[in-house]
Image 1 (cartoon, rainbow, N blue to C red):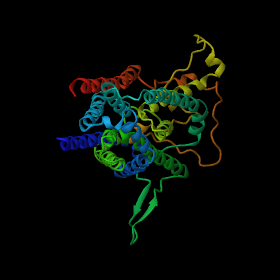
Image 2 (spheres, one colour; image 1 turned 60 degrees about the horizontal axis):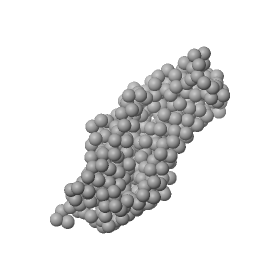
Image 3 (spheres, helix red, strand yellow; image 1 turned 120 degrees about the vertical axis):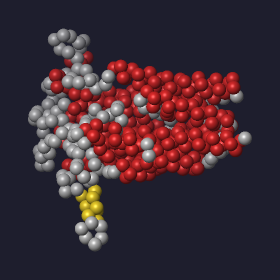
Length: 419
């Protein structure tokens, strides 16, 4: 019976990892695949490699916390491990049904908390630290996004350009006797810099995903001794990689509904901030949600960009009809940030669908377009469109709260009443 439960636990853990790989690969490498920098197979291979690196190094700290920190390892009997993994997988199903990226870490922790409450073995001090991090991390993402959007984003937007190449950046030249690699002749110096940023940040997101998500798939199995930490990392990354090579192909095409309207520069900034927050928390052994942190950074970035239409003194003053307060907008991110009447860069969705507008390349010289000072940008341009649908945002936030809550309650009832 015990061996059967262990096998079931391994299968459920692999299922969880499979789904993590399917969703995370598309989010991390969507811009790189959409802009023809790497192929889907290459993206899956790079994601798997960097996820392994993150899980094998920083991710071990999160595995320790979730396998022998929130509750003692002795509580993870074979049946308890299967129960915890079941509710983690259930959260993925609920989120997929509603089209919302679930916080797998928060839901996995919720299932463990339910076990701890039912058995009276919950480490309340550690949970207070984890919950505090869940509150502080999104606020940091929001604040960093606002500062970058107000002071840094326009400068970067004036100096960087991202174009959609017709063919991959690296190509195989078979004209000689021995095939060799060569760069796409279409690529300019700016394209090379932008390409390095896109691929590098995608790999960084893969590292962060591995560091934070490996524990979600295998922590209960490590806790009950079914697998060692090393074996758990290998199992989690193998399942994540399979998801990256299979179901992630669809997410790589659509690039996720949550970021398709973002200019690619904004998507890269959000990815960098979110991945850094999660990597730091993972180093300290705290499981946290990349989706929550990045979404808050998107909101902060849009608000910061829109706020350039007013000075700090004007923002602090009560709003009036004569001087409207800037709102959070996609237009604020996509609007031209220079005095020149130059179209905004392509969005992530444009790159993925192949519908990126044809724009003239920016001059590769040393001169850079002038960025209007804060308080002098046109508020009508900065508030052209809404960054997010309030109704959709309400649904997302509601499910972020609901799915961990379901996990806690369901796990508690399972272990307190049935087991």
